Image (cartoon, rainbow, N blue to C red; front, top):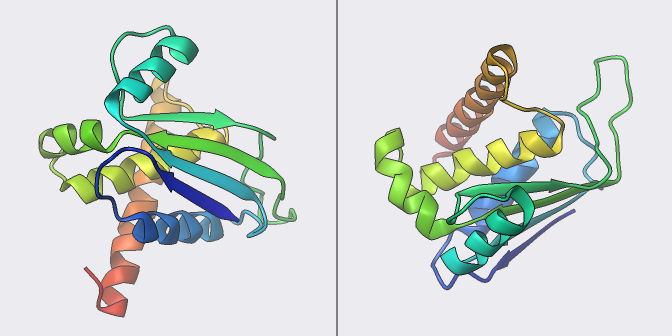
Length: 155
């Protein structure tokens, strides 16, 4: 189950973000009943979270707060269920950095949603090998999502 709340004061493709999260969770073999919350916030709120939870100044683009520490299952394992956690996105920050990453504002939000989701599933990018795996998987999911939308005739 995926809940999304937009408290950012900005227009956002909430339906598209939920569809992408659903697609990614299915691709990663996470039980559809696993609970995920997506919160879109303004810059002051994101800055407050960034300071409080990361002890870093200024707003950031995405934060993840895992709950049950679910992991994608191996091929011979049952998909996990439980509370995935919360992903917090700041649309004004993601829109501002989109061009430098070669993406549209919506594309940047999508990329960061998957980035946050992978953090909820235990991925990290502190070490070079972790980064290679996490960003590779992020790119793979986004490419599959783009292909699925093209197949369905959607943007």
